[in-house]
Image (cartoon, rainbow, N blue to C red; front, side, top):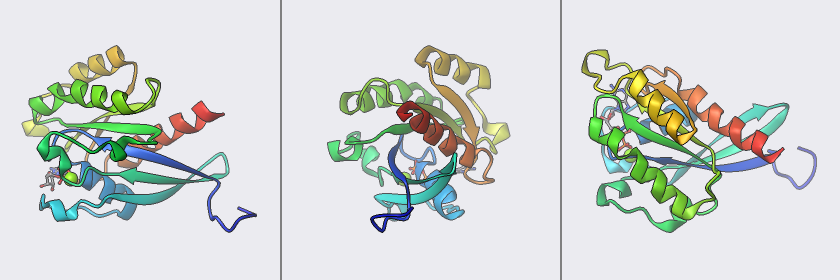
Length: 177
Ligand code: GDP
Ligand code: MG
């Protein structure tokens, strides 16, 4: 970037939504720092973290907001959603309730953002093959109903984590073009 001293061309705010313990904080840790943590302490939650990605030669600074444990109290402050241009709606492939709650999270998102905000549905913990309760078909059907993409990730073994974030960053980028 030439002028102004900024080391990026565009900045996008993304939010991670979904039930407590589906793996939101670990997806963020994996994407931004390539780390994983076994403990589920709220202390691992940060407000947000940055990661720079490159699309068509443009440096895009993604600012990813995590609920930092607030979701446990079933309410997230409006500032969390304000100005967000994309969302990853995360459920745990081994926890059907977290899948059932996706609609509620997306409704909450839509109360604070335009209805055409890009969203990716993320089924996390794909590494727990023997404990899986939600099939790929079931999740794909929901994604089709909502007209959004679906990806299965594992923050533990890194599978598809970067793809999930890049899918949403690409959607935001091409929506702006
Ligand atoms: P959050 O409450 O949605 O932020 O979830 P966390 O990131 O704190 O994760 C909750 C628990 O699930 C922690 O014990 C994590 O280590 C674990 N976890 C997160 N992602 C994965 C994953 O992809 N696979 C497995 N096996 N465990 C995960
Ligand atoms: Mg968390």
